[in-house]
Amino acid sequence: MIQEENFKNLCDLTTSLVGLPKGSLSLKSRKLEYHIPRSAVSVIARMVDKTHQNVIAKQLNRDRSLIYHYEKTHDANYKTFPKYRKVFNKIYNAYSNLQGDKRTFENLNDLKRQLKANGVFNNFKHQTTLRITSGKVQADIKVSYKDFYKQLENCKLALTNCNYNIEII
Image 1 (cartoon, rainbow, N blue to C red):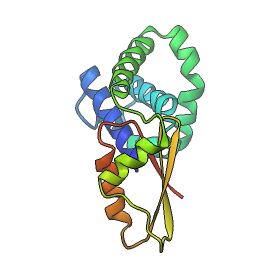
Image 2 (image 1 turned 45 degrees about the vertical axis):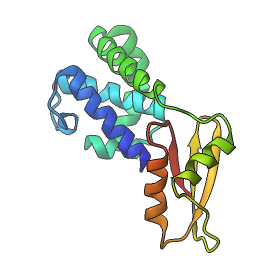
Image 3 (image 1 turned 120 degrees about the horizontal axis):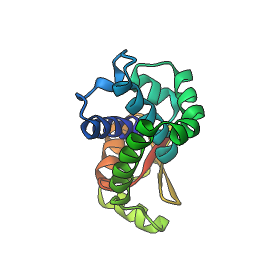
Image 4 (image 1 turned 90 degrees about the vertical axis):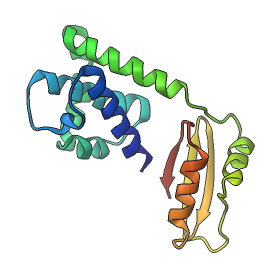
């Protein structure tokens, strides 16, 4: 959920930085103007956000095995391919600056206080759990199927401008 949104934002940032139309990274073209940013954005998503290969592949309209290939060839491309290195550095620095501007929580009490202030609560009749990770802090929110979507939206609202990840356990 959050990984998909973060990766879409990274793709949009990439296309604007390299001057491509929005959504063009998923085109079937093999031209270098598309291939280089596609490869760089895949590696950055894996490095920075630990985005799953399936999420990247789905967004880029590619097979998951190609994402493994991008990761495997990154070091060689970075060392020997100046165009790749330039694009990679440009995207990586811009995305890192955006991520660095976001807040992370230092302790569990701050995170829980922020969630509670925005209407996020544990349900005693829970059927599933949302695990929220921000920095080194993790909080588990127990939710029922009935209020799952509402609690998820409240979590996203509470953590706007924060660096976080939500997993369904």
